[in-house]
Amino acid sequence: MSGRNNPRFGQVAIVGRPNVGKSTLLNALVGEKLSITTAKPHTTRHSILGVLNAAQSQAVFVDTPGHERRSGRALHRLMGRVIHQALESCDLALLVVEATGLRDADKQLIEMMSDRLRKTIVVVNKLDRLERREAVLPLLEQLQEFPFAAYVPISARKGINLEALISAILAALPEGPPMFPPEFTTDRDMKFRAAEVIREKLMQRTHQEVPYGLTVEIEYIGQREDGQWLIHGLIWLERDSHKAIVIGKQGEQLKRVGIAARKEIEAMLGGKVRLELWAKVREHWSDNDNELRRLGFDGI
Image 1: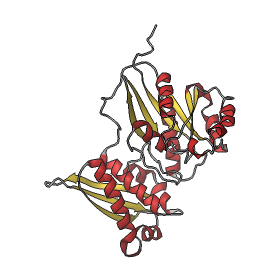
Image 2: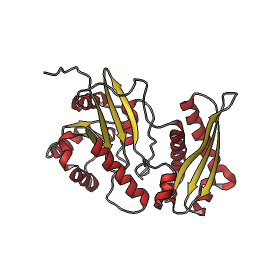
Image 3: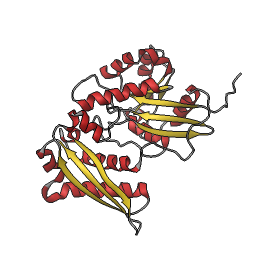
Image 4: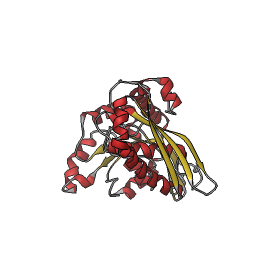
């Protein structure tokens, strides 16, 4: 008979519709900002791996893009494939929904996951947005109609009930030794993480269709003899009008983005950074498989 305290290891896919707090949850579980967050849908475009070490056990989380039933351009189809691949390869899924209630997109995702609900924990997020905690009870009763492994109400942003969620996750993982060393937190290198920080700052400062037509490529990252880091970033946009918005009047918008991104990247690298940014137009990059492959998108 296997012992209750034997080490556990497994891959955990974090899925849900856009803006339910999947990336905030990943960052809270791992205790480090690995995935960028904004109020805009489809901020997450890649699968991002984050590792939680707890006692002798290890959970490997995969943050995924927000799920929507839409074909659209190549980028959206790619994001859909990333979700399916994460679900197919995981030992456990976390389905993130909002405490305020289920929407049609949540129900569509439950239907899509119908064959693996017993290996799914429902994370009822944004508990802090309810005036009274008891207001979540009708939703929990509704979710009990489905054969989920567990239901855990939390607030990822406030850290409410995270320990209960971690306990439920570890209990649901298969027994086995950790595969990564304790200091390992993510499979993404600094080049990727710096590009994502810059994109986050751009998305926070631009509106309408601009955020969805931009991506960031780090052309160079290296450390000089004096210890300062030098980073060259290219901001790719689909229209000249988007480029004008990103640069701003007399370059002020791009300057503000650069300052905000540089401060965060300096904290990540633990040293001074010189960040140089250029905005360029590459039409229809998000609907071109070759461009997506060149820019390092997963699953092409």
